[in-house]
Image (cartoon, rainbow, N blue to C red; front, side):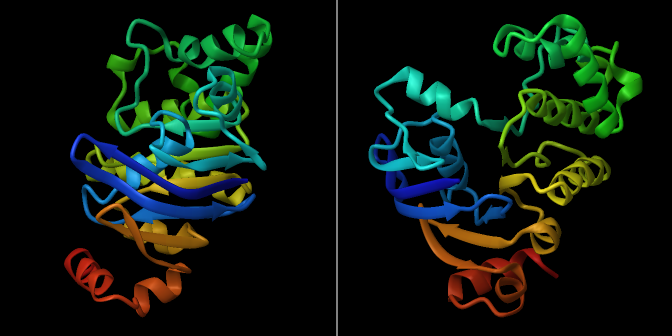
Length: 242
């Protein structure tokens, strides 16, 4: 579904991503892990066209994205849902309106169908009773679950998650991860930047460990967490898994 071919991206003098190549197949769940500043989020944002690689190519369903062509970026982006660290809900709109805005405006869905779909998605993430609430009335975990439902409202073929739990209190992390686990069970293709090692261990088909903008190690979770190959991965895991 996704193929990155030798992508690099710099911000000024900082080389955020250096010659990264990876593939994500349909139905696969890939977790990108590594220390802060290792390039994980930049890789994810290059997939979605939120960042334009300085070199290399991004293929979505065998089509190379033309980053000089807005229509090409939009076409690729229309097939993906993106969930950010900080929710990005519209504060002046109810939960229901947050979920129906894009399906109506972008997909041309009628209001009744969009609302019916929104209620079904809110039920799926355990927030059917919050459809008339506003974001300020929700906890962080509830906001993030609404953000996931809003992404699903666009019927994406895959989901990208950029540290979806890092802004949450510990007890709220569980409720968001549960929703993501349900998506995984339903066969959704997912690329997840996360610091939640337990989630990566349980859910991922593959773990990709990045350091200094490069892929250092790429393995199935069982092998990676029990028998990492590189000294850097061993050091990283020794600090975060006790």
